[in-house]
Image (cartoon, rainbow, N blue to C red):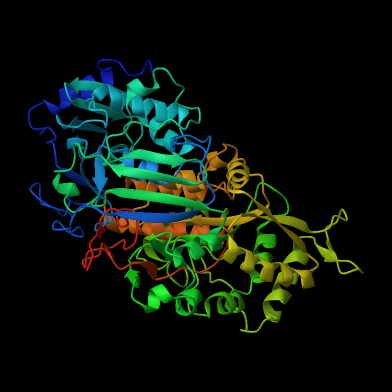
Length: 605
């Protein structure tokens, strides 16, 4: 045990003493917690609004994945684990309702307690909580899990761990965490940490990749599997949590299976052949034209469109600014101008998909058109010397003249490159003052067929500028290894963003990621302005201040020119067997975590 974690620290004792003073009301245990305001559901709620409590039980669903897996531990950097391990077999202290921006309700924990400043959080475990082997979930398991994840797990867990001043057992089923940093999101972040069984790692190294299934407390256990081919998750008939109101209408299927194929094209063919049961379509043009096969025409396959209210997030080609010449914003701006979005969108999607205009576009959190105003401007002005053009004045992505030539934008790109010290020689090659040609690599993973088509068009568009871009395609394991080490010039990049951004923003955009491997700051951004906006987001006490800080962060990110944005979709497109059903009442996040397969069920007509 870490030396900070003793029976009762001086700070904790002081906090308890203050809470007992006359006139200072102690905090009360709660059934749930919201980032702002109170949870929407009362303590006696019967089910989540988007779950069907009358859903029948039984049946199975088979998903198709490209690539493979070589580990069953998704909580460390080493190895690649199936998505379903964390989703289906491991529980957290609290669970998220996807019908609210950021609200948690008790799962392993029956209650949560914190103060107005959220300087601490205390969880009380449910007495009936059990791991799949029948052993109880204990405070020792919770404390060990936090320490193991924070010190040996993936870097995404370290930020929160470093903000914990002390943790202590305060009762037979209660554990308290004191924080050393002001961060109002911390109680919610800890509520979502996976809880693992301490005993299973007494004889094995947590940080080592392994194909030994993790013993969790979730609704499913790992069944039959063969690395690189398939894995099955089988519903635990003795699952302790089956009667919790939070889970009423969820986890209705007996078996969830993932089959693995060489690339996305093969997965789609497997779906058409009836080998898998559900396919999430990301290409709008193919949704209109490629679903004329017999199973669709006969009605065996249903095409469902799921609306959502979440931000666009960012999908595109990311620059690695740790490397020249992408450390120069003018070069990045030039290459953004050379990307003819209108032509590419028409070619790939039939021109139907809206462009990502900022990281939080399509939501209330996104930057607004025109100059920064009001509270947003007030937050940004202290960093005016650092901010790039457009952050304060207003910024929009360049649009082409809707022809394949994109002449005006290519002229602007050439101007920016000259300003950055690049000139085209007599052979038409773009070179810097040292005579070095402008060459770079675009890294893609196997199976990224749509991105490959986009990149092929883009590479040709760069040739008139004298730029030579080469495309390297590697298998999923190499792709993960290289991106974890930031060993690329440019790569396909996707970050799904929520309506409740918080501590994960450090992992995405924090300066620690410049040198620390394994973060999600692939671009290598180091921005005091961005970090100040994240701090403000985390410590805002009003929704209005939080929105202003997020809009300000969105301006810093977008005008940083770190990514060449693609498009997003205002709906999710799911083709699935007609005997697989989902509730009519949809969550505000739409087809998101907590939707498929969690609230789906199997029922023959």
